[in-house]
Length: 221
Ligand SMILES: [Mg+2]
Image 1 (cartoon, rainbow, N blue to C red):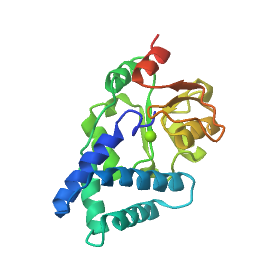
Image 2: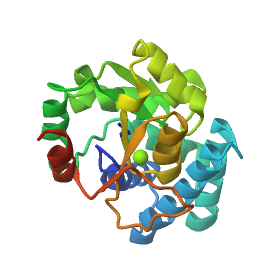
Image 3: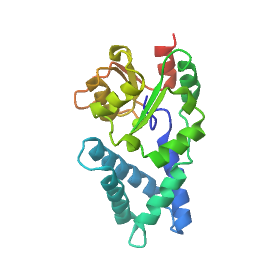
Image 4: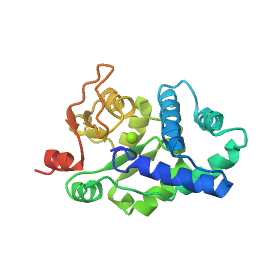
């Protein structure tokens, strides 16, 4: 299963970390910055997941574009460093996510598959208190591979001693990284559509759910 926007409510983590970073830099935080940063961040990750930019370009472009919105007085390097530091300390679960993952671990072998940055994800997983429930945690920043690249999934399957792929379910919010990636890796897929999106690009998930209560009903009955 994916981590951000799937198990963890990343929007909350992002908003708190942005506010803390601005406060640290002595720059006034305005409400519209959060929304603007979300748009910039999602576009940058999409370009990264499509292989159009690499990880350092992602970070650079994201901070530069944000500077265009916040203004000339904004130092994108300071911002990036503070933001990453605060973000690495933010863990916010969706309703029922923690309890459901804990129960799933009693019945299934679990892997966490995240495209995040290692210095952000490792401390967050540590703080989350669920890291020990996963037989494998694959952080793209640590292996220089990212979902939806089949090599990312190959790495994860190898680490799990290659369980049957047709018996594996990929759960995630991202239609390209998680669902299309999972399909290319030969797995069933479960799209958690928690922001009420339309299916696009003719990707047909095996299952579509809205929340963790739905996942519990699907996998624990
Ligand atoms: Mg996600």
